[in-house]
Structure formats: C-alpha cells, structure tokens
Length: 287
Length: 250
Image (cartoon, rainbow over all chains, first blue to last red; front, side, top):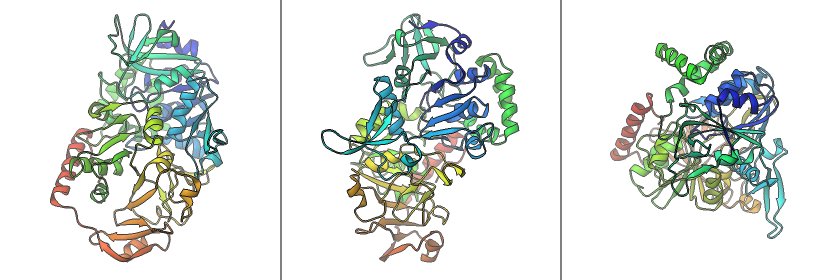
C-alpha cells in the first residue's frame, strides 16, 4: 500500500544514485517539485527517461544529475531549444550525456510494454529513417503471421517513476485527469513509484473510467500543492507560459543557470519555499 | 503561408497537428472553411477547438475543448497507426528534394554542430498519416541537397520507394513555404514548384533552395488570402498574443 509521506522522505528512500528514473507528464502535470527535490538531494548518475524532457530535465541535466537520457522530443515547447540539454550533448557540460533517442509512438508504446511486463513493443515505424542506425535498441522483426516487417523497441522499465496528480485519498489511491500522457503506464512499468498530489481527500468521488492508480501500485504519495508548476494541473492552475519563455534566458548561459539553481533549488528547503523565492524573483524580472 | 496551408484541409479531414505553423494553419481552417476538421494533438486531445493558438501541445485549452482526451500511447496506436488520421502537418529544420525531413541534428550525430529537438511524433506521422503536408520557411539552409539526418521519411529516393518499403500512408502531397507551393512530381516524386506567392519570382525561389529545383510547366500564382481568411487569421493571432503575452506565429 502507498505510504503517505513527505516528498523529502520519498526521494531519500526511493531515488538512488545510478537509478533509471522516469518523471512523466506530457506537458501537463509535470512533477517539477519532485525533480527539484532530486536536484536538492544531490542525486547523481541517473539514467533519465521522459518522452519530452521539458524544463524539468533541462534543470536536472544542467545540475549534473544525469549520465544518460532516453527521450523522443527535447525542445522547450513553443519557445525553442533546451539550452542545458544542448550544452550537455554539444559540449559535454556539465558532463557528457549519453542519448538513447526514439520517436513518440515508439517510447509511448515502450511504456505500455513495460507496464505489461513484456520485453518489447511492436509498431509500424522507422522504415527509411536514420534513427535505427544510431540507436541499436530499435530493431526489426518479421510478423510470424503475415511476414510484415515491423519495428521492435525494448520495453521501458524504470527503477522509479515519479508523476504528479490532482488527488489522492487517505489510503493512497490516486486520481488524475486531463492530458494523461503516459503517466499511468510509467507508474505501472516501474519498480517503485512516487506520486505527488495537489490534495489529499477523504473521497476521490471518481467517475466510471476515471484514471485511478490503486494505492497498491504506488510506493509513496506526497501532498505537494502546486507541485507541477510551471506546467499546469487541470482543474487547479494554468501553465505559466511566461516562465517557460523566461527559462530561455535563464538557461542560456551556464553561470546564470548555475546561480538560478543555487538560489531557487539548492538554497531552498522545499518546493513551497522555491515558489516564494521564484515569485519574488519574477516580480522583479524585466521581460 | 498559413492561409495557403489551411486551404489544403477540408471538412472530412482528421488532422494530426504539431505546434507552430502547422497549428496555426489547422486552426485557421477550422474557423474558416472547414469547421468540421477534427484536430488531434499527440498529447491526447481529439477534436480540439481552441479559441487561441496553444503555446504547447499540452495547453489546457486543448484538453478543455476536445471531444475527448486519451493517453499518448492510445493516440499513436488506435488513432495514428490505426489509420484514422487523414492528414499530418509537419515542419522541419531541413528538407530535401523528395520531402524527407530532418529534425534531429545539424552536423554529425555523435558530435552535432546543433542538436535539434528530435523526432517527436513525426516519423510515425510521416509513415502512417493518409497524407502529409509540410509547412516551413524557405531558405537554402533549410532546403538542402542532402539531409544531415533523415528523421522522418517523405518519398525516400523517389519513384515508388514508399510503396516498396510498405509505408501505409501516401506521404507528402504538398509543401507550403513563405515563397511558393510545391507538390511531388507524379512519377518521380521530386518536389516541383506549382504556385508562386504574390510578389515572388522564380529567381527568389531558386536562391532559397539548395538544389536545382524543378518548376511545373505552367506555374500559377497562389490565390492571395481573401479578406475573410486574413481577417480570421489576424483575429486569431491577436487573441493568441493577448493570451500568451507575445505575437503569435504567422
């Protein structure tokens, strides 16, 4: 059964150096609070997987947490590049980053395979593309019934999955809605799972077909209101598009980025404190 | 460019959309001549009808206005691979004469000069959508003789290469740029300029293309945007700018 605990304790206990970690949330419900806590606790040598790295992995890569990235699209959505990701790939800063690159159809189905405890996912993809030439984990097989040549991609089975959701009840059953991405699949594919939530309620009042992760599929549930900021939580708060644009400037230069991480993440005790510091900062920002 | 691209969508279309130029064109079509067009975003919304152009494919307005929202794995399995997408809109950093595209790296993969965002849903869209429309600004840096990396396939090396490889969709049927419209030659599949936008000359198109681009025997002029189309686009851009605090993409 999921343990209701603090985010600090959950990360301390469940995320270890060298782990294969998935922080999912497809532009919605991105677990920023958890990502920051991983940075704050100084985790190293992580193999990160996320379909769209977004700002969260840009921050974790730039902060030196990662040795490897498994992904399918690495830009700042609607804004431009992820400068820290690019710096790691183009110049090896702060350390070389090994890339395992896929497409969305591939990686999303790799999570399904992981959740199904199957070794690979099958899809009709990659014929003629250069991606398989540079990723030897994209292979081709022949359908045993029709003889059709199809792509086979390995299942994603993280050591830890971390997601943010809207609600959990006091037993640790989790409810999420809106744009779901591959959050459910990531949790069910992983050996351990941390879910941060906006609120803990007595009764989820879920509707039929609601996306529920039963308490017994989750390791830890942590109440972190606003925990997806600057991404959004459907029904709670909007995406902070201004921050996404501001990130382009913050992350462009190494020293400015380093100072930002120190001031906002390393020198703060919690996500709540981060939000306060960020608000003061952004109020003083000239856009 | 946006208007020209939007004209290629019709009421029966189920359109898989990315952000930027494709999103503007698809939404413009929806609010003008093709209100029945179904917009699908890879984040999960099916039948999205946003009032302003989303900044990202996860914007709340997409989930709120959609007929339904499904998981990303479902989008790629049931909807795209399942053959339910009639048209995919794509853009790219580089394109070649057979409309193959590169969104991965400029330079060498292991030591890239520029690391681009990567594949996203493009390889699957390029393979499985009924047809593909490409929208991008035309420069000699983008329209290259040889791609640094083939992320998503167009017509491969031409002719019936797609069919021989067993790709289910027809592939690129049009390329819309800020200078002209192109279509693959019926037999060779090599991109051929069919229309020049108002004020654009053949020389300008040649200068903005990194290969000796073909022109149709009778190149026509792109019909200029109507007052209604332009009005709707400007309005959409204004609403978007107000919502996101910056000018929207044209």
